[in-house]
Length: 186
Image (cartoon, rainbow, N blue to C red; front, side, top):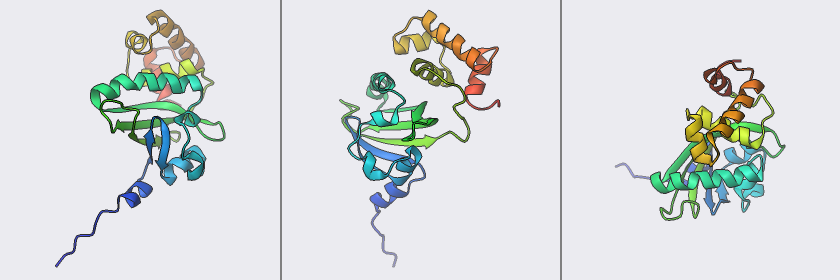
């Protein structure tokens, strides 16, 4: 006779092959070792901390929180690739996915996963916070008009930032820029 063992969810959380955390109002309540190691912290250093410590700047933290709220309200989850910051201040590309546990308030409680993309996509140019935000949206395949609408800028301003990114990455076309941002071209 087979005895069914209870599932140890704490062990699953701690041994997941990606960084994971549980948050309340964008404050880290629990995290696994992979998340702490990815960002260069000890687990206990992250507990009770705002997600702000993982962002390159306070402005990016605020804008990202505002940007994901309507998407999580509509879909119940969110996923993107963005530049994040380690404890030693190094910047790296990270795939972030999350699900709100309260449909009426997506930031009230959530479960988040983080995957370090730095081995596939190094951060190779000094970018401003706005350029990082626009680069992340370009990688998602969004047009300048869609980006402008999503982050409340004029399409002309987005085009100006895209042109600066193209110069910084020595790209002749938007397609080439996206390939370089994705790390396909070296």
